[in-house]
Amino acid sequence: MRAKRLILVVGMVIAMAGCSHVRMGLFLLQDNPSENDPDSVARGRVAFAANCASCHGTNADGAGAEAKDLTPKPTNFIAPSYTKTAARIAARITYGKGDVMPAFDGTLTKAEIWDTANYLRSLQKAGTE
Ligand code: HEC
Figure 1 (tube, rainbow, N blue to C red):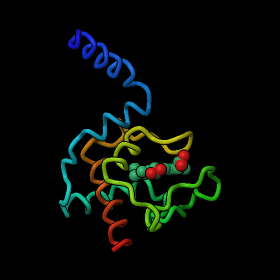
Figure 2: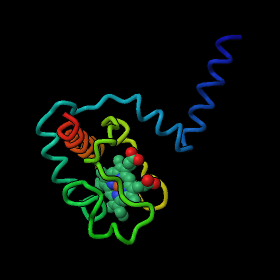
Figure 3: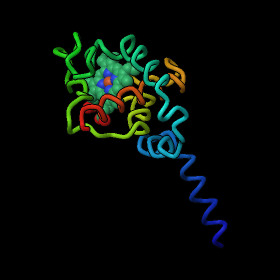
Figure 4: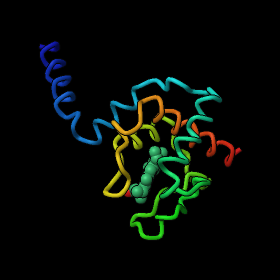
C-alpha cells in the first residue's frame, strides 16, 4: 500500500515537471558543479556580458540599455536585498521568469548557466560582506 502511494506521488511529480514550480524545485536538488571555482566566476562574467548585460546592465545593476523599455524591470543583482543562492539563480536562467526574462535552456550550456549563476552570486557576496 505504501509503495503504491509512493509510486503514485513520484509519477505525479514527473508528470508535473512541465509545471514551472515543480521544475524549479527539481532544479534546486542539483549540485552546483562549479561552486567556489574562481575560473567559473570568470567564465560567468564573460557569459553575462554577452547574454545578459543588455537588460541587466554591464555592472549587473539592472540598468542595461534595454531596461528602460521593459516591464517588469530587470533584476538588480548588486542590490543588498538580493541574496538568492546560485541554485535559485541558475534555475531562473534555465527556465526564465515571466514574459520578459528569457529561458536560456538550450541557448547556454548547463555549465555556462552555472558559471553565470556563480558570477552573480559572487557579486552579491562582495556587496554584502
Ligand atoms: C530581454 C531582457 C533580459 C535578458 C537578455 C536577460 N534578462 Fe534576466 N530578467 C529580465 C527581467 C525583466 C527580469 C525580471 C522578471 C520578473 O521579475 O518577473 C529578469 C529576471 C532575472 C532573474 C530572476 C531574478 C529573481 O531572483 O527574481 C535572473 C536570475 C536573471 N534574470 C538572470 C539573467 C541572466 C543570467 C541573463 C543572461 C544569461 C539574463 N537574465 C538575461 C530581463 C532579461
